[in-house]
Image (tube, rainbow, N blue to C red; front, side, top):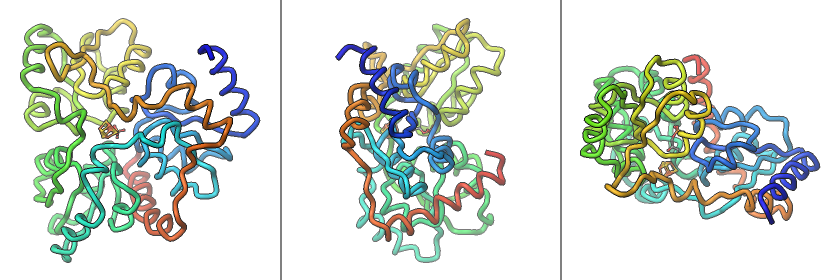
Length: 313
Ligand code: 13P
Ligand code: SF4
């Protein structure tokens, strides 16, 4: 089917089924353009909770669609491609994590939303890259903390808060391979450009950054900042919105290799318009989670949303 027909089919099915499309900023531009809401992990969770739709088509990765289901269990949640995973999820298996956690019974557990529902169920509170610092700071200074699974984000928070959280050893396979040598080369090529980076990047890139933030925070920074050139150390999908909001500004993506300009998350990019149309039409790829797990995983996510609200997110 050609693109226009697929888009029309999606729009028709959305109306018939009272469905909405939630899309992460790392989705392909064609998906971003038909989404009812585009956001980062926190924004998407908030939308999933408050929508009146009967059906959510979650264009992101599996843990995000699971989070939407946990927050809105009465709704049917679909993901265009069930295989859309995340390295942070696969590098934090439940059994191993529980063994680790049990070694430190006096520690509270803060987990990044990029983890499985089972890991969420054994956590005290969840965080995203937008609210991570605030969530950590909501614990008393002397509280012993475990942070999982992203060690880059965890050590960034340790460095700016002075905490000594124990870190689980996992990384985002997209952000972790961005190379500081490439960043330095680009900084030399574009001396007026500001370096903006996602906190899932390695410390030596973050140390050089003019601004560090979640996907939404990076976008907002490029909109409100007077600068005209930005070196962007994150996934490529966000450039679509940056360019849309600021057509007169230049965005330079940090490549992971010499001849590669594609910091594409292979999982985020699995979703296509055709797959969205299929899952709406044939009701395939539905997220199903058992009730007991929903109840256990929901508590730390709700706690995050409550703290976030107080923090003004
Ligand atoms: P945010 O959406 O919180 O910026 O996280 C980025 C990411 O890698 C999501 O998988
Ligand atoms: Fe996971 Fe990284 Fe892809 Fe986000 S960009 S889904 S953290 S692998």
